[in-house]
Amino acid sequence: MKIAKKIAIALLVILIGMQFYRPEKNLSEGDYVAAFEKETQPSPEVQKILESTCYDCHSANTNYPWYSNVAPISYWMDGHIEEGKEHLDFSEWPNLTAKKKDHKLDEFIEYVENGEMPLKEYTWTHKDARLTEDQRKMLMDWATEARTRYQVAQIPN
Image: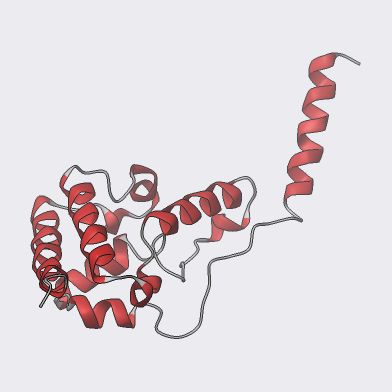
């Protein structure tokens, strides 16, 4: 048997085996972003943008498309979600200090302004996550306004 055929068979066996060992899904019960939204007070328009572009990778709950059940895509998505939550997890907002919240919002503004968020890989399959310039400006204005609350909280009395 040729080496290429042996490699192809081995890869097929691995791919089939991967279907039985999937990463744990990022799912939670309840309102996992309530504290974040209460504190930062996004307008209904901004809240809708956050829901369609941010929360899947940056909160404790992801809406999974059908293809997320197929390996290796499931592993690829899990890696993106875990990395996204490492950088910013809206569900963990109550556990952050005012200084850290201010910093996270500053980074949020930078990533949105530079077009780094949402990721291109995400917008390929989530057309409603493609931000217009007006939506980018709306997000940055909201985050800038929200930052002022945390900056004031850091001023010593």
